[in-house]
Image (cartoon, rainbow, N blue to C red):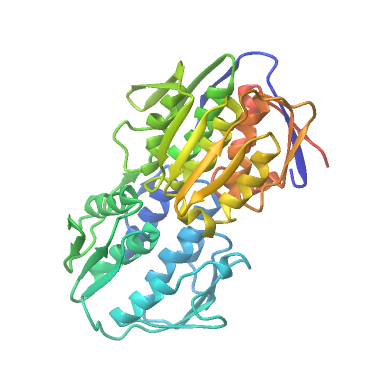
Length: 411
């Protein structure tokens, strides 16, 4: 399905019990924790996402050079893992990955006693690792508004360090749910940590073998919330989701109430139903930045104006997501702009008027493709490079077909 696809609205009611892919956030953490604990835990329902497949492959590899492709989570988690290993290794990725900053994590690991250097430009992959010899400190101070993946990477190796680790987070803490996810999974595998105020402490202690079943992916569920919101008539249930979830993106259930979608939980199944929408919403995405594109696209199509904060990390994802969304949503008459530093406003068209097929670029970014796809319920659209979804939700286009969306390959 390389090249481009055209999406057209269903001719019947949009309907599916969605067999969601599993959470790659949980999967990749569980894989690393299992490896740090000796590799004997039984992990059930692992994600089929390319990021998780890559993580699994690299943890099992004895190669000198490890290629994470475009997987930011894998780059950060494997950097911490390799930093405390006894081998000389190298880690690299796609050209875009090698433009994504990693200096803060490398500096923190080197402060702990790692020996990491840059092969090319300082602050960016590829990275070279010498064997870990001894721990220099058990105290780190880092900004709280950085990617939670840096913090999670440090926390997961913390109990394996001779002196453990205490991290002090300065300023506002972003993506707190993902830090808590990491600590909760560590606890499941026998390691306790304390997160009090701005400080997280983990003493030296062994990981223990334990089975774990990965939850379905709330990020993947978010696209179905958007489909439901944009459909005139739909019957959607989502499988394998927990009302009390480790995943920060479960916030989509609350956010989407403002866009006309109500969630009803029954065990691990969520049934969606219609409710009233609001014409103006204020949303802080600092705990769930991966939801922003989905919510923006849905709001633009429904004529809902947004005021948003917490989008800073979107600039250094697989694409510059704020810039990309401004361009793509501009094609349907919406305007996305940063009115002042950190405050973004989406002005949506009062009435969606599209007279032709709209062609959307995806910027080599899986979330661009999946966030824009639900717009097909309002007008026919073309999605370029649809294969980018393999990064997190390989079955996405097949699930759209199962729901009744017409998906046609153009080349």
